[in-house]
Length: 186
Image: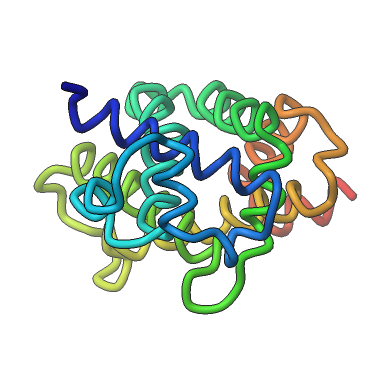
């Protein structure tokens, strides 16, 4: 019998294949399970709905692999890997990025990135005293999650016209400089 991770992957691949043929909003759980060759209750043993499955895809197939790089201060490499993985499945992520409303791709991705970054920040900060009371690990994680998701979604929706490496360099440039520095360099 297949383990949880294998079934999750099977359902994710089924979902991604269906998303290439029709809008994500119109994909049914029955279509996902039929394509995966499992029964509907199997899906519900693993996920609440297709949006939770999308969250699993983002967390597991995109972010899980970059977390060790981020923890080791290899931010540019982590971003290049992330953007490369998105580019490899360009059609799926282009369609996913169009999800709007309560279960928008942006809100799901941002929550996943925020969770990843919060874990890294909390691990690194330990018991250090914060310089500013309002600058909590949650606030910092939210700030960077929003900026990263904005960059990624804009890149996806503009047709991924620059390479993952170039995008990583641009993002790295922006996050390491003040607004004054950026304006001076224009």
